[in-house]
Length: 325
Image (cartoon, rainbow, N blue to C red):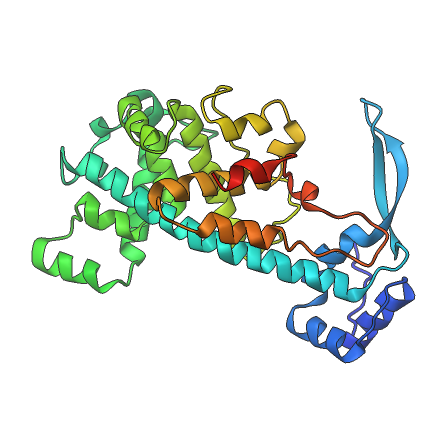
């Protein structure tokens, strides 16, 4: 296929938006955002203000819509900018909490496994046989072999002084409490998934869960969330690909608001709630969740005739009642 969309200057980009019905109150400021943030990134935030038309219906009779190259009445450029800034602050606040959670998990795993063997992470018998031997696709390596390769790669790429110092003094193998400091969230999540069930359960219980499978899914989803934040991607109304599981009704009362609510589970507010829950375990005296609540309550009200609220993030009714508990 031939790509037919020509390059456009920042002024031409702004003119195009205005021709499609977007109101621009401050052209110099709008041009500044286009030059600093970019048309394509900002387009994710003015997308909700486009006019949609029904083109078909799915098997359940729900309308299937496509966006037109027009904006709803009274759509302002500043509406998209405010959404962008809200989302940016949302990711920054989550990055703060996810750092605390990741560091705490490193300690949890290294302390538990390291008590038995300083090099437990290098031995296959440390892990659940079925989990470690599992293969996927045409890859001849099993999960343990793939994780070992990933782990070794991260240790090798590490430029940290403590890694060089340890190897010079003690040899090439890093004990788990040193190696874990070279791993990213995804590596930690994969290691947890390989661990024996009693070990997974021991750590899950620290975070108030009696179901290790649920906690395993939480770590996968938080790794997904961390990657969204790290790559500065849109989050506020995102469809979550790696969705977390929920514990049985009544196990964690705040989770009950999401049970049997597929649309809520597919949105990021559940991930924010998991971060809230785990951050309060890691730092019992934290005020992070209150600061996050204040930010969410500052959700920008648009000029446009398009109702955007925290509902688009998957916030369940009455979430404020349990958020501050």
